[in-house]
Length: 369
Image 1 (cartoon, rainbow, N blue to C red):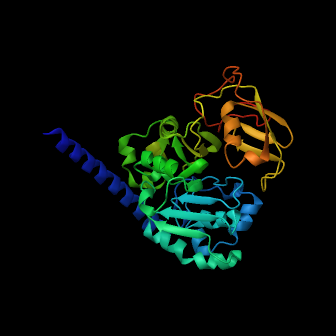
Image 2: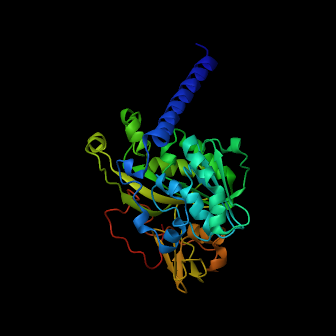
């Protein structure tokens, strides 16, 4: 068989498999699930941890939108006023309508989802929320399409400040394309801030093909280290974990299928900063948080290793210095030092597994990620 014909057959087979996966997901979230109460794991049970200002925002959202929420984790990046946000896998639009209140009337939130039933719910309530928020013009827009093919949805290069996603990327059969497209549409210094499900080891193929496990955000989960490597290859050079927790499986049948694998719900932030290094290098730098980030006046939490109290000199590695200086956070900090002298790598940079579910970790003082 000629090589070109063989490659064509392989591409067709891959395309068929990806389409089958997408059909399974569409059916599960469009027809099988009627509300979040139908889910079999606690991947989506996170609202108890939301701060009061977000709970207040959720009270302004239409009941039909709320009942169709299937997300996980806290998708709450800071300093959003006036920003353009893209929500990958927006579903019925709950997170979009919450974020629309935080970006304000001068900002914009764009939601993308491939499930017609979900997008229909989101679009149905655009005008309701405009009036509810007291805006002259709606600042939300919803597009039916695939998060792997944002180029087909008139989303230009370097056009978005922040990308969020809530327990969706694990459902994609082509995660590489999702991250590549995300990197493309982000502005320089932009951020991808998202929650998803990850596994402690690679999920075997026979479980990947199980529709229930896939719909429950389990069998499509990436092994955490594979995700780190993929993110770095795309251009997100220093993945940062904000929060994480081990998932509880509420269904005995599901638990028996995947009992040998641990799953975690984790919130990551990825920055479009091409000059970041592969490790936390020490240049003797520090930052001082001046305050001013809405709802985070006393301290700023960048990730699980960087809780920066207002007014305190906080030693940081070169990557953290750049993440704070070359992004929307710059105006909230004073920056000490430069890159003239290198003092080696920060002690204890890296870990066997990044999730801290079973460990107590200090959130004070300086340190690397």
